[in-house]
Length: 189
Image (cartoon, rainbow, N blue to C red):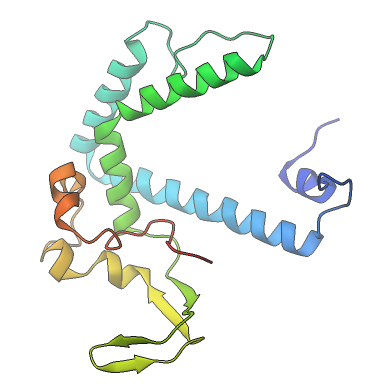
């Protein structure tokens, strides 16, 4: 029997055997899935609009994949035993491979900065905050407009609408506030 994404969500159970809340589970999971699909779409769009960057990403992927001549990013041949130590080793190898995809990572971050799929996020402050001599009382709902954050010319430069992966070099990232780029929001929910 074939189960699609929605079937899996509707039949999912908690560890104690209770069914998950259909409304909460379906909405949360579908929202997450759509967010990820949108993000991937815009990253691919950015690369398609900039073939020079796309070519550099492809060359980097080809180099990393071919390092062990195994033809995959996992870098480990399939083993059907599924032992935990093998799984941990596979994950470590994947992380080592991902760490070598530096240029691709910069392009992904720049695509997320330019075309963030969620326009804003909400947070409730736990204590009062003073911003520019204006007090925001505790328990206020604060809207963070991600588009404005990711296109702030004072942070990203007058060319903030251009696709420039070099914005995410280690040196450039160290110059910016750690919250200038929030691809998946930040802080307590």
